[in-house]
Structures are given as structure tokens and as C-alpha cells.
Image (tube, rainbow, N blue to C red; front, side, top):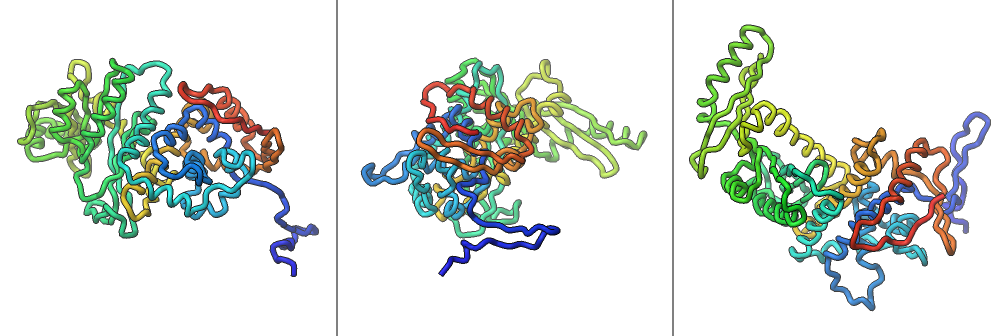
Length: 460
């Protein structure tokens, strides 16, 4: 009996022409741009760093799927839009995925199955190993700088990671009105430095001082003279954090929640804004500054007021900083420095939505932290691709989802031979010139010091 899958599929006619489909196209992938991700990883050595940080307790004589191959499989798959482990039922047989992970270069063997990958995730129960994985992201950041930077601004922010099961560590959060985790992210510009999963029954600033301490130690180990500033909203304005910054020469620009004392100190500026609005009818914006110390603070600090008054009434906002007024005027510090932290929120959305950092559906907590770090690793690949490969192009500011759609989701026929793996990319691909320029730029990048480049994959 003939399998129904062997029969052609006859669609409705197009004019006089019949439209027929079959499954005899050969080894075809829809992720032809995966070779670009592989070139980025060849340059950064990210997968190798992750693999070195994660112990493998398995008996080497019984290992079928090497840990490095599985890490590459998971990170590349997330970058390519395959968010779920179940996606690997079919993805494990994709000829290009086999090639870029290194698993099937010689024998064409399938990649790890969803159950094998699940075992990988659930054996990550060692916080020391997770610390090593997180440190690998910072090491990549340090290694990617050819010259020591003069100044670094670290953006701290928390977000909600809504969950729908009984995962360990999930709690109901009143502000987000859902059961969720409360991950902490740290960015330096577009660079992701930390993605730290936390339960949601804590203060938003919990552990931020410890994370900052570790980051400052590593960054100053690499660049002793670098000037470091932490920037965050009012959820992170805690006096112990500011005191630590004062003692370790770390600057801060933090949001400050309003209260009656601050409003009383702001009355002269608020009055000027109200009178200006009443006189002109246009929204009035004024700035002021004064020294202020909450009852729990160890000392007074410089506080900047940005106050607006319009038809909706008064709208005061406050920030606290240690930066001197002689070098940093109040208006510029608020508008140019503090408000720039909004870009960090865009990067978190990219991480959560385009790279599936919210896919924390493991029952245990630490495997979910591992998943967040896998997503963070996929982001690092995209960020480097965007910053190094796409600078000066139409996609230099595109988000990961757009880059995936335009540059990674490319149809290609994969041909294996004894000496080569050849990709015959779609002849109708509309961005072939950009793809070609990008590929040649990435191929020319030398591998960062301290690691060997993997074997080459040819395209043509």
C-alpha cells in the first residue's frame, strides 16, 4: 500500500496551470541564516565559554550528544525562533542545524531530542555553575572591547515573568496582578551583562547590590581606571546601595519616589510652573535641586526635581545622584542621562518577547534560571550581529525579531559531500546583497583570543 505522503498534493489551478506540491526537494532548511549566527559565535566564543562553565557529570564512554553540541542547539534554536523543547522533534533532523552545531558534520546524525535537552536543563542544579554561565556573558563583553572604555553606565531594571503553573519560586505580585517571577536585568548600552531570575515575593532591588559588586569587581579587574555609573528607577533607590557606591567610587543616578517632604521642598519650583501654565496655557517644565535625606539614609544627597504642569495638573519627578552640580547641570542630567535608561526597557522587551526569556516552565527554579541564561546568550549573538555586522545598514537598529525574519529565515538546499557542506540559498531572496556583505564581514572577523575556531562551513 502506498503511503499517502508520497502522493503529490494538488491545489486549485492557477489559470490553465495546475499547482502541485510534493516532498522531494531534498535537504532543505528554512533557517539558512543560521550560518551567520555560527560566525558570530566563532568570533565571540560564547558557546565554548558556556560549555567550559557547565560541568558535565555524565560517563564519557556513554555520551552520545556532547554538551557543547546541545548548548549550541538550544541557543541557536532560540535565536532562530524555536522557543519550545518540543520544536526539536523536527529540528534535530534539520541538515543545517546539524552542521552549525557541529554534531552532524561527518555522519549526519540527529541532534539531541527534546527529552535529552530536558535532562540537560534539569541537571543544572548547581548555583556555582549558573554563576559561571552568567560570568561568561560579562567575559564576552570584556573581550569584545579592543580598547579600555573610559566610562560605563550600568542600567538596572526588573520586569515580570508571568507563569501559568506551579513552578517553584512563583508568587502572586500585586503590582503586576499575576503569578510571576521577578527577573533582574543589567545592560551597558545594548550589551546584556546580567539576567538574574528571582522569585516575585521580594523587593525589586533585592540582590542588586550583590550583582553590582560582582560586576564592578570584574570590570575593574579588566579596566582599573574605568568610571562606572549605575542608573535605575526608584525601585532601586536604597540607601545601602548608595552607601556602597559612595565607598567604592561608583556613581549613581537613581529615580526617587515622591513624598510629602520632597513636595514641600519643591513648592517654589512647582509654583513657578503653575503660574507659567496659567499665563501661557502651554505645558510648563522647570528644574530645581536641593539636598535631601530620608529618615533611613546615612547622609543628605543631591536631589533633582523635574516638574511639569499642564491641563492635567502637576507632575513632579525626582532623581538622586552623587554627580557634582559643577559638572552635571540638573536639566542635562535628567533629560540626557536619566531618561536614556528607557532604552534598557526596550532591550528587556526584546529579550522577553523575541527571545522567549519568559519561557520559564520548568518546575524547579534553577533550571528556569538556566533557560533565562540560554535566552540571554541568544540575545548576545543578536546584539553582536547588529552592532558589528549591521552597523551602517538599514537593520543597524532592528530588533531581534526583525533580524530573524529578514536575515535568518532564508530557504536553502543543503548538499553534503566528503569535503564540503554547501548551502544553495534561495535565488529569489530579496536581501541577498545585504546577506552577502554581512557574511563576508563576519567571516573576516578573527576569533577572540583564548579559543580555537571551529571547522568551516562553505556556502554557495
